[in-house]
Image (cartoon, rainbow, N blue to C red):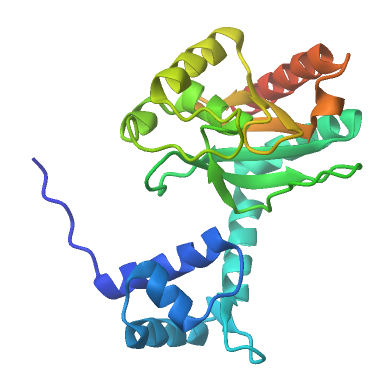
Length: 257
């Protein structure tokens, strides 16, 4: 068995703080971070001071709390600009969003997820209509209760999903799938039909449709979703939306090959 590489603990702690701020999505104080991560306050303070010096976090001088810094934004934008996937997918995603006037998300699996499978939103086209839940680019979200997440697990995440099987799946609504046997059965159905649906599983009143994007293999590298209020998605245009998102993702896949 290959020996696990040794971790540099100071770097590991710094990354844990950045990931915590991302996950919480809000400013946090030293005590809050210390409690959440089980670190000494002195360690948290020194780590934050170092991150702030490099521009990876910034302190709100009014309340003393910390938030992600502009350096992370600049790095993220650089990655986005250099990403072949996002540059190819963007015009197609924009076309899909404009046709149905709904939010479109482009996501990949979150390889650093812990406890249960997650995906990361790497691009988004805003809706021309009001939508209550619109997670930002760069945010991480659960796979088991989102169309794009289930799509990624079904078409590109077999080995990824295996390491989480049996772990607790958080429940968000009374429609959330929280049993692994039910989720695995759902993934099999998704592979058969070629697309996934989030039927108010993350938020009541919100429905999403997603289809996979492939490059050189049979495993999906990303997925594209169309999200909107259930009343608009589960309308007489539902089948048209399914057909269109499959067409769009197939076109993106061809462009990537």
